[in-house]
Image 1 (cartoon, rainbow, N blue to C red):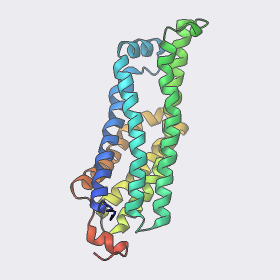
Image 2: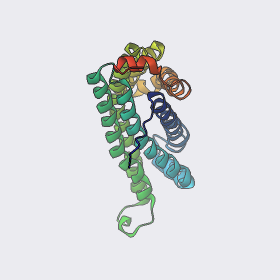
Image 3: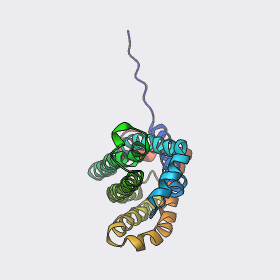
Image 4: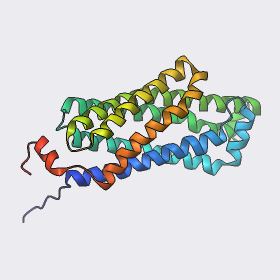
Amino acid sequence: MTERTVTISPKGYARICGALYLYIIVAGIFAELFVRSRLVVSADAAATASRIMANESLFRLGFSGELLHLAFDVVVAVILYALLKPVDRTIALLAAFMRFACDIILAVASLSHFAALRLFADADYLGTFQPDQLHTLALLGLKLHGDGYAISLLFFSFACLSLGYLIFRSGFLPRTIGALMAIAGVCYLINSFSHFLAPVFATTLFPGLFVPIFVAELSLALWLIVKGVDVTKWNERARIPA
């Protein structure tokens, strides 16, 4: 009996990666701009509690979508490593581990995010707290999640910088996208440090940083879906006969 091994071409892997990356972008934007920005009132714990409880399904949907985003991001990290290691294995490994670190930190920070619903639940063990205390603790948890997010994006910035370098040098992906990803990495780096060093300034800075980040990551995702990689040049890089 002969065993048959089915392999996926680099272009196939690239398209899978692009589709997952597109979901990550959509889920991240939805959770941040259409859930947290809509429900969390930064300086008002009672208003935040009221909005979350009135839109509990939306809150749960955004949270669940972001968890799936993290799982998909691990897959993206592995595929990008496989695609880009012919360029520079060490840098590709660095990009993958930086991405893993980002995902782990954000997954842990998500506990404080979901804790808000636990605090709003009508559970007997919470009876020792007054409602306003529960609301304050919930808002504190959401703010700690924001801090964890900023820390995770610091690691992600180095993943983007590494990817930008690899893509720029690859020859089988557009140099323009490599340059855009490097710029996105710098934007993420600025965003994370400004969050801790100048939080008031960070809130006004983020909209300007979001545009190049969005353009870079969306461009990479769409290119991988539509074009994939130049298989001939990828094979040359990997020293495999075309």
